[in-house]
Length: 539
Image (cartoon, rainbow, N blue to C red):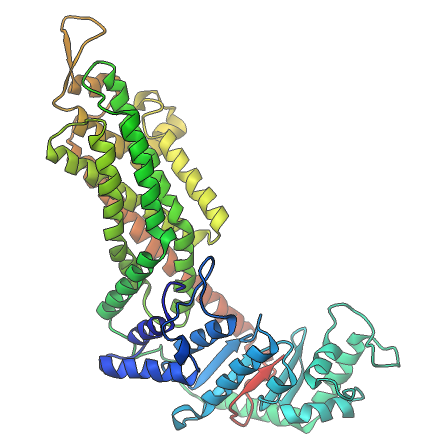
């Protein structure tokens, strides 16, 4: 999270990943030791930073990511392009720190890193090297012997040229051009075929095949899931505290929305200031309540970019087994409640008392309750959208479109009995939360009021109940509390649906990986270097 400092990010991760058998002080010491190992002591209290917020450099951010993943001291570590976007100096610093992990705690580790365009200094850090071209293994063996292999195959590295640059240039067929340094005029495809044949004819290749065959005969049993992380309750607690701190520091999450809500509520309050109890105030009250239920809650989509960032962090951490999906959902839900309550009470109070709605505090509390639950409901809806459409622009458009349909079919712009049945009456009117928000707010405001009857008739006055029944076509067969209960039930349903979606997405990704692995099971070229080495490279 960009709002956390280096120390906070690593400490929170330590509390999530490390087992319950470790005390809090031991977890803290492990986190501090890991930060020292990656050379981040000076940046301990520096926020990670991101868009619009100054923070760590690119190399430091990568080292923070590595810190988080090595807290559990894994025996096997995969790194996908750890130097991408870094200059040569930063790349060497990051890779040298990674290379030192081999001897951390006196336990040897296998580190596999994919890397492009390494400098000569970075290249020298690798013990073993695997060169791939279009999925085919061109070379696999000691990095120090790669130059000799290319020379013996007829493609020597020119003097004073970085060997890794020469290797990549020689086997890169993206542009289908002739190799500049080879005067024989053969194509890159022919060069690659020559290198592959040379590699398959080498003793190193035969040794790898023998090792792979021996490993395939071993019965190692089923792999066990990662164990030893925090308990479910501790996961919920840590994720709640981390998310709350992130929401507090991220101005775009809630604070900016509070400012916008206050401005809108002031505008709404001054526009309908002291509307009174005349016959004309009936329409004014209805329009005011419609705006509150529709457009004040609609503005909740303003926090969608922050939700997308949270989902990206969740997907990465969940993929690495840091915590459960349920703990993430619970932590996110609990941490958001104080801010949603703040957004509901302050702007809601302005929008309620400036126009002069019913003065009874019970009516005000119901008004705030509906607004608060609707805020939760829209945020739950946008979390579902964020899990399905992880793109800022497309997600906001999708969420806005869904809410637009709900607003149109909520029973205000066209009364319930006038809605076309095939779509708008069934199912939009019944699934749109605006229907229950409108009806609850209208019952809360109009019940008990009496207005002058400007349309004439037997009575000089018209009651609020008559207005609800005949003018707004509100269903009066149940109380306003039922509407509030339905809204709350929809919040629970949306949150559970969000949890189901992310669990299904996780299983689908896992199944795809498993299926791909099964298809490749009998066509494995290289399983692992026959001799455990501290650092493997892939180019």
